[in-house]
Length: 209
Image (cartoon, rainbow, N blue to C red; front, side, top):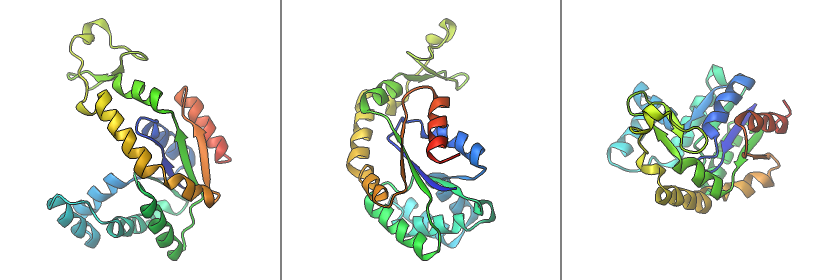
């Protein structure tokens, strides 16, 4: 199964990616992890990317796409892969599609985990962690025990203001990739509300597993 996983911040992509990788026995390719690995390995594209990152610039789309094509050509992707974190814009989606087509690689599905903004804000702003153990809690859904509650902290990007900004960026920049993949007939819309196990079942059903 060759797929891309998309959805707004806080939709549960990380949780579902771990489940799907296990179900389909395919590698999870995070664009951020892939970039860091290429830089560490010192590949030609990794060196290019490192130059831009050290200058505080975004890595150009053609470099990222080149890395993706290199990565999915590796033996562990012979039976498929799950791409996460790219594309983030419609131009990126179009460029990736064109490059994959030239490379003879066809995407089978783009899974969109749909969650309205209000539940996402509630999910993210309620997250806190124990600085001593790293354990993550949720003030409403999984409250910290009484002996831990006094020391939990909230990440700076988990505030209402930060989440609202991230959602606005998602809607303006990333959401336009949805109609692009929908027009190709490979978009799978999945309700991301509810128990994570139920969401996994909806995704696997949508993918015919």
